Structure formats: C-alpha cells, structure tokens
Length: 455
Image 1 (spheres, one colour):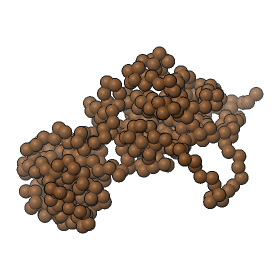
Image 2: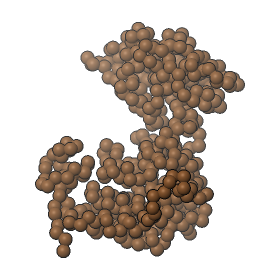
Image 3: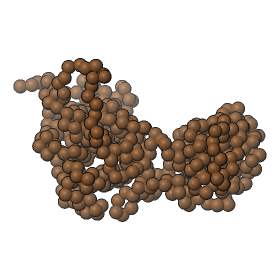
Image 4: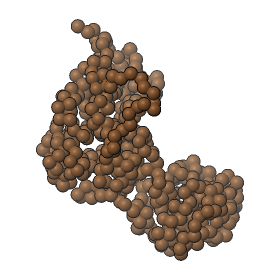
C-alpha cells in the first residue's frame, strides 16, 4: 500500500511547503497554502502514454504532413478569425472569462454549427444538470442531432466516454470542476487542475479530438489554476467586456496555429452571441458630433483595421495633485503624452485633471493611438471641435515628432469606406499610399504641424 504524504501547495503560484505557512514565500500571497495528500507513486505516469505515438526519431523533412481538412471552420467568422482560420484537429484550446460573460454560450453555438456540418460533438458539463443544459440549448436554438451532452466531473469516466464515443470536438465546462480520484485534493486545486488538464491534452493529441477547456478566472482576470495550464494548451482565448456593455471581445493571447493579434467582436442578445462583422460602425455609432474632446483613430487588431473614438476630458483640478486616468489606453503612455504637450506645445496642463477613454470598451495598446490621444486632449483643453469627418493616427515621440506606423494604407481605406474625408497621418506612412477617392491625406512631421491643421 502506497504511503501518503502531506504537502501544502499555494493555490496561486503552486509553491510547495512541508508545513503550513501564513504567507507564500514565492508569490507573497496570504492564506493561499492548502493541504493536499499524495502517495509515493506519481499518479501521472500510468495512463499518459496510452495515446502517445511510439515512433523513433525522424528527420524533419521525413515527417508526414497533415492531411487536408485537418482545420475545419465553425461558420462563425469572428471565431474563425481568432483561432487562425478554424479548429485544428487534436488541438487544445483554453477559453477564459468573467462569470456570465458568455463562454458556455459561445461553445454551444460553435458546437451547434459544427454538428450541422456532420461533426460529432460532445459537451461535458461539470457545473449544470442535463435539464439545465437542455434549457440553454433550446434558448440558443442549438438542438442538433449531432450534439451530445453528459454531466460528469470524474476524469476517468470522461476519458472512458471519449474513447468509446470518439467525438470530433470535445468541450469541458469547466476544467476547475473536474477531478481525478488518484489525487486526494479537492477539485479546482493546483494539483487537480494540472493533472486533469495534462491528461486531457494527451487524450486530445493521441485520439485527434479537438478539445476546448473552459476556465474560471481570478479577481485579477487571470485563469484560475497553475500558470503551467496556459503552457500545456495550444491556444489561450480570453473573452472580455466593459461594464454594462453588450459587446464581447474575444482575444487570443497564445495561438500555435495563428496570430495572437486578432480579435473577434460579438454582441450579446437574448438568442445568444451575434457576430459583429463591421466593428468600426458599431464603435462609432453613438459618437457625438459637434463636441470637443473627441477624436477618431484607426487601430489595427491583427489584420483588420478598426476605427474607434478616443474621448478626453480636461478640467481644472480641486486637489494639489491632478488626476490622470486612462480607460482602454496605457496610463504611463498617457502621462508621457501629456508631458510632451506641456513641453513642446506650451500647454498648461499641470493643474488640470485629464481623463481619456476609448469608447466601446476596446483596449488599444499599439503606438498608433498616440496621435488620437494628443488630439482629443488638446481639443478638450482648448474647447475646439475636431472635424467629424477627420481621422488621425500616428506615434508621438518624446521630441514631439510624429513617427510612422505600419498598415497605413489599410487604415486609410477603412476610413474612406466609412465616409471620412480627411486623415492626419505621419509623413513617412503617407509615402506609397494610393489616394483614396474623396479622402484628403494630410501628412505631418511633428505636433506643431498637427496643431496648425486642427486648431
């Protein structure tokens, strides 16, 4: 009989200690160490090799290539975009997001579309009964004959069901609720999440089953469980939203089969998630006209340009230290741009509160947003209106110069398609851009030229 030993494991970072500690020495978290019981034999070594390919090492040129059809689309264009073109056979995708954001809804609609294409789909629910699952499916209109559901939390029974059923797509909702009897710790613990996700990954690779793992997130927004979970899987997706917004943004932070810069935009409605095929029109639909402090800039999300509104509010402060707040933009970048405005253009912002927001809940991290922030802040401070048919983009340097950014022609084409008449852009980016019908290109070299053009 295997002898048991007790280990205290931090539920945040995975640090192990022989005795309980109030504070984790690794991540400095308080009250995060939980007692877990292990046997002498490792529970991971008995079944992981069952699905592994036993082949000798081969030269890279002799490895057999994937057959045609190993990547299949989901009939959801936004989802395909984030995945890199579709679902790859045998891949493991981790989907995280806040409670109630629509993770299970997205998976149900995806499985319904795949089942209608003749794919055999299996949905394992570990948090709901089958009756509750059917109610959700009826509300979403996902009553396909090829969509099978099961309520199970034991990993061993899940593996047995997958081996017998042999589905094309498997969804586990959620990975934190699955447990293996080989470990004595509770479901959702570091050891359980690491062990169950590892075995499911080996199962997916060996049987060629595309697997989706739905994961809970912590209060910091990261997927609960060990960080090794994100390293094991092939793709990590996060679903985001701003408060009280119907829009959901699906973002890839890791993708072995595609770009990590792509995003998918969905709108939550009563019948489920609806794709937003033209995000620019949605984000600009409620833009106020004839108001200062508003500027439109073109952001590149992967290969797609999206026009968004950057809003700024500059008001006298009532405190000794003025506030600087950025929603959807980097706070440090905002402080840097305010300092450049004060130094290079002589704007007195030392006693002004400055608030910047990207409308629609989108977060922009690329440097092309600099010129949009500068234009919105200057417009609000001077109380002067930027023409509603004008779009700006460009990076601003510490010397006040406007630097070029990539994909300039795609940004200009998107603005012209939406009816914009003029565009302020870096002089270096303007070279080589074909003149768009009805679009005036205004190349600038520094902030003083921007100032002259706008105000």
